[in-house]
Length: 222
Image 1 (cartoon, rainbow, N blue to C red):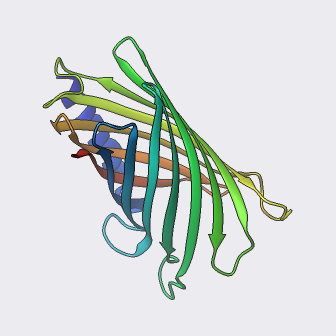
Image 2: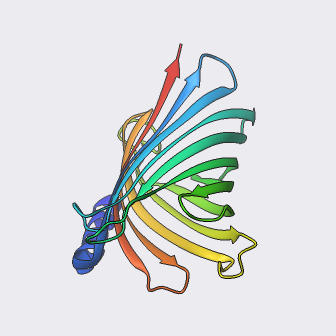
Image 3: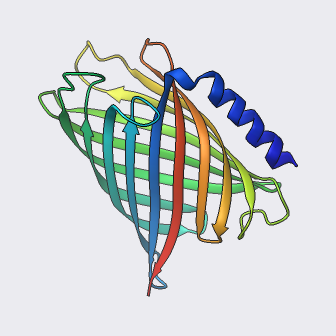
């Protein structure tokens, strides 16, 4: 019942913003390497200025992860981002990105909390080099007895702040903030779906609204 109420509420919020919605389709994968502490992160995102159509970005990200402790892991990775401007001409440009991150996880009651700090070195086509630091707080809240096992339903929320690192005085320290709420469902213990809504503020610009569908998949490389 709680999941149904949240789904109806989410649908109403999305419907009221339908004319100004951006659409993001995302895949987040993690492959555990045998019984070791190493794993591989692999990610693909397709972002549009509309729910479907008028392409904004294609983002690919991959990284090697090492779990130092059960509740802490670190990643060294690479990202490639293809960006197009809204409408026509779309004036596409590319970005190569190296990143390092640490994720600390813990529980509070039945909630799962994660703190992620990510440092990025950004090489954007026809722009000066710049860095960026990001902090994100994730919370997953179970809504039924299955919790995070197969057929589990949960509420997923996060807030992430982005800060620029640059010697260019025209680039402000604050880059953007993202606030997200979504409903998750576990098809299997290692496979889940999320449908959610995100509000993003970039610099001093007006906020944008995003409908987000994501797949979350964990695998074992035996």
